[in-house]
Length: 139
Image (cartoon, rainbow, N blue to C red; front, top):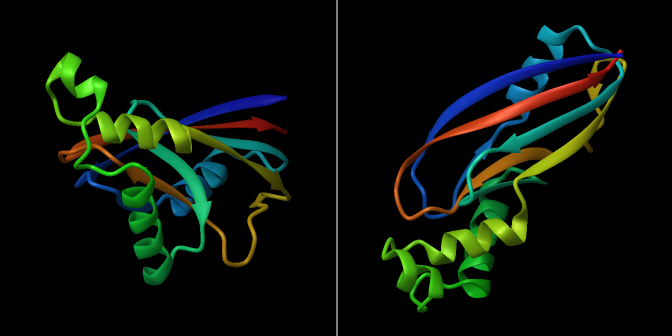
């Protein structure tokens, strides 16, 4: 069994900025030479998350509106009272989504559905440089 680690950095705008990172996972698989196993993607940071969706404009807008309804920006958060940085909402949103995902790998191919992409959502209240760790375990 082999373990391969690959890192990707991307600039984000914050405020529910959504990026398709599926090509980055596919590139890591190609470079790794691993054909079968698991591909894990993890964003280090507490104000961003990773999930899957159909990466198309309508759904991107729907996701942004959903997070605004669930965890509005304009409400007071205890985190903001403690730290004064105004991004309590982004920490709560990221906690709901989670920082990572695991995708099965078979015959060198990510086992995603036809309309399924892996996305990173940056919830912070400012632009950020995000680091995604992609780790592939298998043979």
